[in-house]
Image (cartoon, rainbow, N blue to C red; front, top):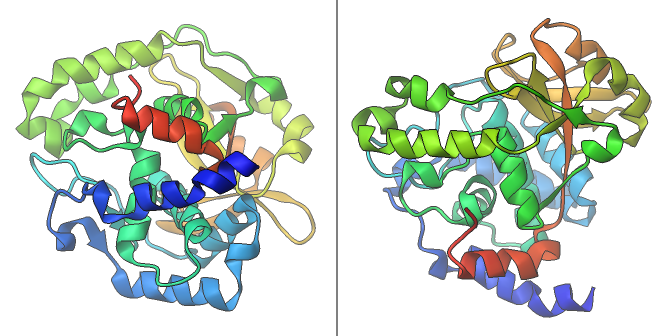
Length: 311
């Protein structure tokens, strides 16, 4: 704990200070929904979210975002330059959980005077390989399996899947981004990045990736906590994951799946997790990822950024 206490001010300055310098596009492009941000900050201060553990803090943010419209491609904000960005007016399944988590982590570092750039800094820490955006589309973590790997290497999350009885996902491959590159604004305008994206996909596919089959999920639900990131695996063979959201335990203790729903076209608290998995035949199981306070990851986070990020 003393190591964290000694380095926490450094981490705050490093990730929230002007030295980050990674907002690479005009502010109007990278932040949408400033009035919504102010409302969230006011609610967080009234209800003292900062005093909550990270998981409960993340859920508090997630609940405050209920009803936010579902919107695809909110990160495709430029034809050439990649930059950390936030859209509070519309989210997809991934941006929903990362905004909730990023906002919750932001509250860890400051007691007041929060600004949109603080949230952007936390999003960058989570969204990009090694915690840094270098302006290239390939610095973004495009696959949940890669997000888990990179964030766990930096100490920002713990992948609990294997310890909860997860089994290897065999016979899988990734090619979505490189195969359908014309659907990405960045890749369509920068086709020279496609081979690099294919290499990234091959590297991810070479790892042993675990999931908990959906038939086993009821047995381990009691071990899932508020704010855990629930990645839903698919049947394959193309790809590993299909969807993502947050674990939410209601006042009766029932574990629900809280997510940006494409069907409902908004952020909702859905049915109990094990029931949700059987709604769609394409779902095979889950991965359970527990975020950590960013300050706990300080030594490895600083080391990875100093070394130019992880590969």
